[in-house]
Length: 276
Image (cartoon, rainbow, N blue to C red; front, side, top):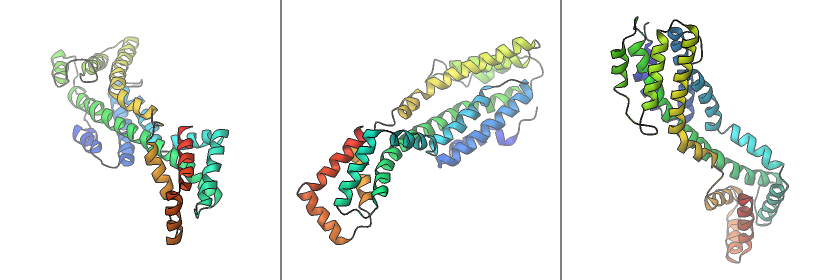
């Protein structure tokens, strides 16, 4: 089997180095799809790890682009009475303090500031995890296919040579489960019994999936805890947005209002919203 140039290790490395997380994710997803198809061409029917990785990377892209979390949070937050009340208080105090936006725009700004901060944190964690898994495991799939898929008979020394470049030990630092996974894939390549071939392929998927989840655990935990945001940072960003576009006299009045404590009511209202 001739191995396509656009799936070789050099291409994997180049994609992993792309600085734009959205573009990188799109290319990672496409590359996983192509690796899965090339793998199936030699292995036969049945999902391999790259098949599942294609779907997972596509889903990750929604979080990286802030689509799923922002959509879900906005729907949830808009249906919470306590949040509705907090947004109304913020908008009222902001208008009294000279904000130029409409009442509805102020409510949307307040809600958007909280949602965007959580979405940014989750998207960053998922993007780093997407890159981490791709540059490690996709690279090994590419190397495995380039090294072993041209074999016409089972050669234990060949798969052993491939595995020598994998680190010993358990994840997250070691790659012992990748060794086990690719050994199972290699056995499946030469298995004539369809049932045993399917079992070996499934076992390989499980080994590699177990390694993947151990490697991703820090990013998974960070994404799940994305709502633990920096209150002062969110408050500062929101106040800047609320009072953007105000004239000199309004800004001067805001200065004295803050000096005499009136703006502190708005500060507290924003903090109350973030803590809900």
